[in-house]
Length: 442
Image (spheres, rainbow, N blue to C red):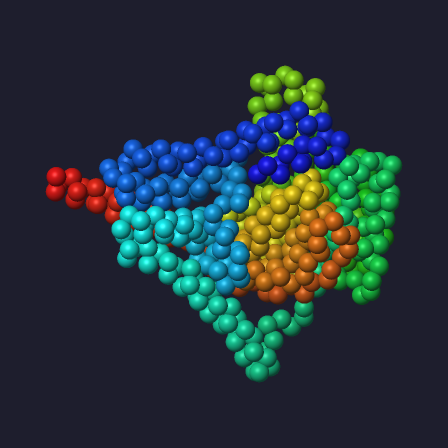
């Protein structure tokens, strides 16, 4: 997570005094979860081998807790190793990230199991990845076979493609909020949105694409939208809105060509120290450094309703890293849209890690996901995590995506962390019994 430090010096935010916090304290706090897992395992286990088993249980449990404690930050968890190959990634539809964390830890312990003399356990653990890969290939193959069968019977999966234009303006962070350059930035959005015909009915811009307060600059916003959209078009874009004197909303809005906002969504998972300063009252110096403004979290997660496209659920920035967040949405969306701005992190690994986490959400839920970045990597994924289109880091451009239908709700979408809970319980019971049997022998 060292790359978080890049956001402290990107643009003119005044956050540079918090550089040590990003470089030292964030990794230190995250390391406490693994330290706690190791410490508790040492106390619970009576011997080295049962301590190892307890460590598997505790590490998977604390990785789950990392997604919830305080604001939660399940970034770059062990389970993301399964995104290394598309066939392995399919297991996320059953286990989700937190279940895959448990599997990843078990696989990582194979050498330790072997050294401890648990050869059979090591062999079984070693078979996990091949079995997961085979299961994933079967899942992908079944989709291909189904598609061929539909075509042979004259029953295409979609009567009309859901075409969407993703626009990545690639505006440098140190220029993004410069009022003098705003006309040029908006003109770039207009040209990318409307420059090539035909224009899809739905156009998507990234997080805070309109870098001005909507209420204060409504006329400019309306003029920009009218220039970018066809007469029957719709725009989903990020825009900051004012909630009160010292509180803003990081919003996604669904806009008509006349600038009228049909629906809006306010970001619920806010970034500590980025969008708000935690416990501001306890730190009187905070206002002098970062100013008096904070973002306020939203309260409703209702999908946008678009004719032909169905239900579209926005997820703003790092909201997409939280497993199960889509399952909290009723009714179930047909398309997930992740608006973000990864220009904060420059050429670090951060934007690419962010992309892979978004991809796993699509597989977990069985719902296509469109990711639109100011810069970073914009991409479209189907419900299997296959890349439909992509715009690379720091490239200004657009891409038109034919969005497929969602799948039926996946096992994970329905049952959540059920398999993880069962797995942890069985491992814990097994470990307790091992120690108990040895105590009786003595």
